[in-house]
Every structure is written in structure tokens, then in C-alpha cells.
Image 1 (cartoon, rainbow, N blue to C red):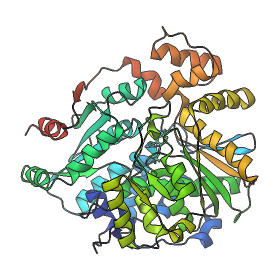
Image 2 (image 1 turned 45 degrees about the horizontal axis):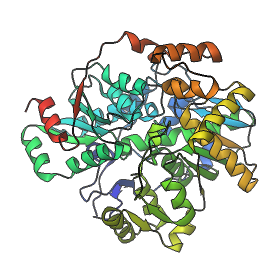
Image 3 (image 1 turned 30 degrees about the vertical axis):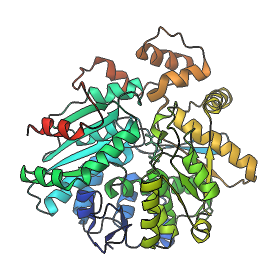
Length: 493
Ligand SMILES: *Cc1c(COP(=O)(O)O)cnc(C)c1O
């Protein structure tokens, strides 16, 4: 098993090399050359804890890591940084299951991968005898930034620069990033939206002159965005884990198919689920949930991906995205790995902002269903679920929940379903609180958090509670054409 590019340049590299490089030389995304089917092992995995299962899954992707190296990375990641030993617990809400991926240090699902990726990268640097220092460059719509900063803070031989849209993240998200400690961290707000940030970072990665210049100065760039296989592969684990938990608790029988509903932005989370299915996990449907930025909904319905529309700022900012980068990996699979097709679609996307897949590819999308929810529906859903079950959803998870309700109405499918919950409601407290009660406009963010806790009788996660006592460490903003300048300034070059 090795990693190849979605764009077919015949590059074949190891997992550790792919983790260092992030993107392929031809700008394609690295994908595993094969998937190991482990369906016949499932019954032996039911009693494993999260870390043990992570080893079983990750060793099928990260094949050049030794057992010792991989276990070191797993042990370092999934420890007391999480507020539950289960790491990814499931709550039963009505007849459905909510998989809570927000028990890590920054209270969002990005922690599931970004707690382990720094160790995977550090190990990769050592394995490959890299001489240069690695500079992690990340564009974030909010959650990735803090999770990456937290994961990489003070990791030797690595520096991290995070760009976020100055007016496209929640106040708590912003505060989380700006208070990050660590000598090797740099946080910059961009006057633009998430796509500006992401495009700016992508352009830097493909800027040969700039990369050459950095290399002479002793640095190489890498990415912590969800295109890196060091992000993607750890996410495969919790799809298996949640399935096996349901088997263990006798909610389903081994071999039963289940649905997953995934609040989707860059298509990394749901793609990891699809990879789990390719490894033999019994899945009926992946319900891809979008907010008002419903590019993916249109794509699943019509086969046309059209980014030519205004980006809307919603109450689920981590899903405010018009170009879902990881979708390229799905195109690769549904075209039966026809890299000519992938190239031609991506060219269309780059040149015209739109592409259309052929009928054959569309047929291979049958395990996906696209849905989307408007802002009103999100608000109503948070209230409805809280009133009915006393279970508090965050805005992103509410998008997923309401898409699932619509799916059931449309299809009458009664397959057991896991709703993937991607953030703590306290990360988006103002919007969550105003869904269930009136919010006095004079309240500051921390008063809102306290009120939410009092009203719902739920506990404020420690990393959020502590925030107000932390010092602001970062206060830089820049224009969208100034990213390179900010990087050099931070490196002191
Ligand atoms: C990142 C994120 C998403 C979107 O996940 P993708 O992998 O980008 O599709 C959804 N919800 C939250 C809270 C997130 O942080």
C-alpha cells in the first residue's frame, strides 16, 4: 500500500512522505492505492477501546510506520486531553444515535485528527531524516485553526501559521485562536472570506519560487488542512468505533447496515466514512448535510457542481464553504480511478467554476444522499430537540439533524442512523441560546455561556470556561494578497 495522486502523475509515495508533503506535486490529493477489506475481522473488534481500534484501522493506511511508532502517536493523542475515556461517545436521542466528536481539547471534531497528526508528522520528519523545519500552513473557517494550533503548539521542529477570515468565525472561535500559547504559533486574520483564505494558502503551496526561497532559508511547507492524509485517515476510526459500540450495546447486530448523517463543509469527515465503507463497514447511506451554502446538495441531486454563487455567512460557519476540497477524492473513486476524468473536471472547476459528472459516475454515488437546511430550520431544530429530549445540539449538528428528518420523510427509510455531532453547543452559544430563549443583546459571550448552562442544566466544557482568563497572544490582520509577507515576517526572514 502506498499513496498516489488523484491527478495521475505516477507518483508513488509512503504514508509518512504524503503526510509531510500534504499535496501532490501535480496539485492532486494523495489517496491510498488500495483499501484493505476488514469486514471479516469486525466481530473481533467489538471489545476494543478507541486507541486499540485506532491501531487496527490506521495500520492499514500508514503502512510505513512501525507498530511502536504508530502506538506512540495514538497513545499521545487520545489521552486526558479528551474529557471522556470513550473519546467518541454515543448518546441515544429518541430512536437515533448522536456520535459526539467534540470531547477533545477544542470542543470540535477537528480534534479527532489534529490531536494525532502532529505526532504523525513529527515521526514522519524523523523517519525521513528531514533537515528542514516544517512550517504548517492552514486556512481555517474556525475550528481547524484552533485544533491545529493546540495540536502543534511547542512541537519540536515544526512551526504553524493559521489564516482565518476575520469576519467569518464565531467570537469564541476567534478568542480560542488568539489566546494560543506556544513560541512556534502564528495566527492571522484575513480581510476576506474562508475561500479567500483557502485559495491564498493553496496558491502559496503551488508558488514554486516562494517554496524554493523558503527551502534555502531552511523551511518546507506542509498542510494541516483536511486534504492531508494525516487528517483524513484518523477520522476513519470513529466510523468503525461507533458501529462497533452499537453492536456491543445490542442496538444492532453485526453485519446490519446503518446510516450516517454528516454535517459537511470540506467533505473530509464524510469522506472518511466512505473510506470506512470501502474497508468493509456495513453502511446503507451517507446523508451529506449542508447549510444554506448548498453546493453539495445540488451536486448529489444533479451531478453538477457549481461554485458560481455567493458565499453565505450562516450560524454554522465551519460549513460555509463553496469548494469542498476533499470531493476530488470522491471523484477519483466514482470515476473508477480515471485520472483523465478527474483532471478534466478539476480544470472545469478552476476555469469555469462548474463541472458536470457523467452518468456512469453519477451511478456510483448511490450511497450518498444530499440534504440542506435553512437558518430558520436550524433554529427550530435546536429548540425542538431540546424541548423533546433535553438534548442540546450545536448549530452544525442541528443542520445534520434536520436534514435527517427530511430524509426520513422523503424515503421512509427506517435504517438505524448515527448523526455525527461535530461541535459542542458551547462553541456557538449565542446562536444556540437564541434558539431556545430570548437573548439580551447586552450580554457578553461569557454571560451567554453561563446563561446557556443555567437554562439547559448542561456543563460548560473546561476549555471554554477557562478562555476568559487567558491573555491575547495574537493580534495580526492582513489583506488577502499579503499572506506570503506575513509568513516571512513570522519566520524572521
Ligand atoms: C470542520 C467542521 C465541519 C465540516 O467538516 P468537513 O470535514 O470540512 O466536511 C462541520 N462541523 C464542524 C463543527 C466543523 O468544525
